[in-house]
Image (cartoon, rainbow, N blue to C red; front, side, top):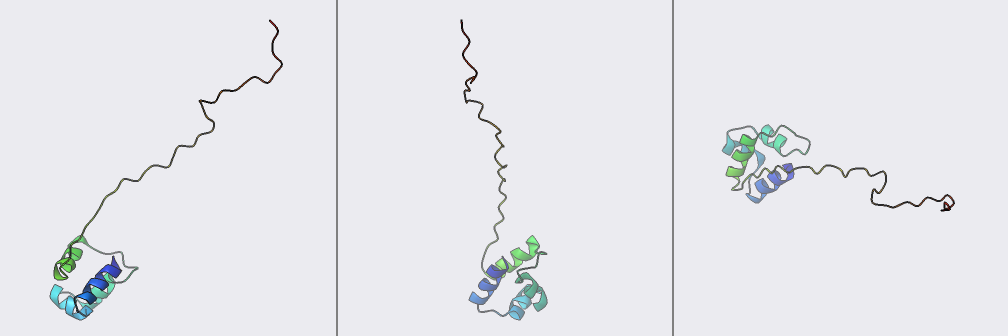
Length: 88
């Protein structure tokens, strides 16, 4: 996300300070948003950035598939008795 923000800003021909001025925030805040290690993104700020850069924000929730169940043995397998056959 941070790299996308920086790329959109640069494509728009804006410096961090110019984008900050458009958003009524500080250049330091824009720098944080563009930092790969920053985890404080708010949805409202991302929307403001997107609007200023003529982009949109998409958030997707996806279910996580549970890991496959462990199978100890194959229940459909047939097993023969290896002992000597019984005499009738």
